[in-house]
Image 1: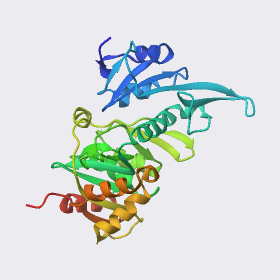
Image 2: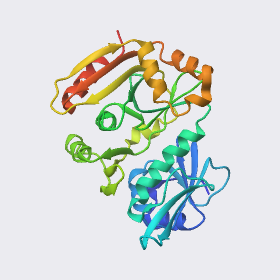
Image 3: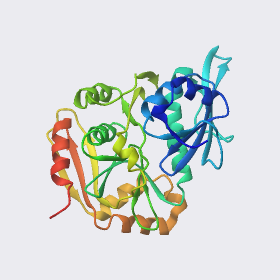
Length: 307
């Protein structure tokens, strides 16, 4: 069966495929076959992936064959969900209500693992005017909130979690997927971008409350358009702080990026050289900020091509 836009499918059709032979999901250059008997995935998949293509009759090669199955925890006497990628998993069984976040976390793991020929950085990344803005940051730095505000505005989402840099040409590969929002960021983005489609929060995960924003249709449509790195910004949110920034040398930025690279040990000297070449023309900054308006204004002013 040929691909069909997910928005053209009913939730019942998605659920039937998930519980049957599998739901074939196309995300950028990746093909994923998802099976799940949890009954918890069809609604968020249909909302968040509505602009992606899918197959209801699995055929051909899939990069990932994923199972999310419910299982009874005999210790707690509760239903749980397990993530399985052809016999492997990086995650423990979680409460059944956490099935959707587990799917998204599992997809990140699969994509990062399958992108081993490229440099994979734990970082959000967006694009405007043909240049990528890379946003690395530790938990609590505000990178996902900033990414959401930019991507749901007039920047193109490439990824909210993984910056995948081609070893051959240094361009960032576009893999737009739902944007993760945590805790206070959920209501903040709902207020800041009221037009956004956002799932109901899933509470009590190991990251707190989690919700996801649907990526813009334009980002999904442009998912096969890689771009070079133009800017690297290391954001750090400090409540009520005045915005302050410091230019970084590319050597300083490269050191920080390597510390945030998943597969640095596998890539060796060639990976280091390839990443250094990829950021050779990038402008790099460390920015502290205390509110979303100030950092958005700063980014729009400073992260644009020189004329």
